[in-house]
Image (cartoon, rainbow, N blue to C red; front, side):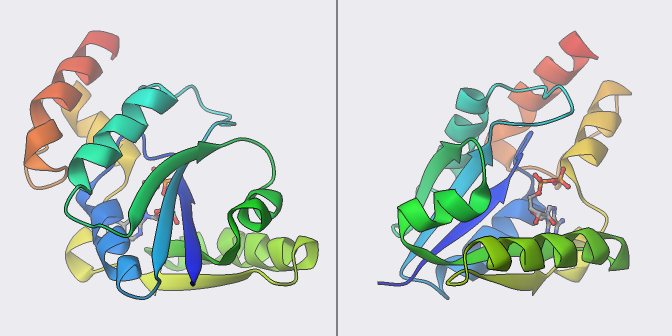
Length: 161
Ligand code: ADP
């Protein structure tokens, strides 16, 4: 049973995240998409809301589980019995930080490798922050987030923005 963890803030989940989830789910027997608790930035959605969004949009993928975690990813991965961490790469700017984290995680947990999936070209520019920026300024986020979540994300972003 090969388990991988896909960690992130998912604040909120975008079509870019879902593309990585779909692609990673065929590479592993079990994929745990895990919302990180300890964020420096104040998130817009609570961990529970972010998990609920992820659950609603990954229902059709039977080997995908939604979870959350606090503390060190290397320890969490060991507890979950994971052999890999999945990360998405959008641009060279993502690379340096991710490279450093991958090496640090492998030092902490030598059984843990990081697998990088290149973004699909249509999602290269997409991040949760871009979605929030567009929504707060009244732009359309159709095609950036799952259809079923669009109205809720717009509503919350405008209220808090
Ligand atoms: P972001 O706010 O940038 O979406 P997250 O922490 O939620 O940040 O991202 C979680 C993971 O998903 C990271 O590995 C990130 O590189 C990856 N990711 C986010 N958006 C995309 C995208 N559009 N294409 C590929 N990978 C992505």
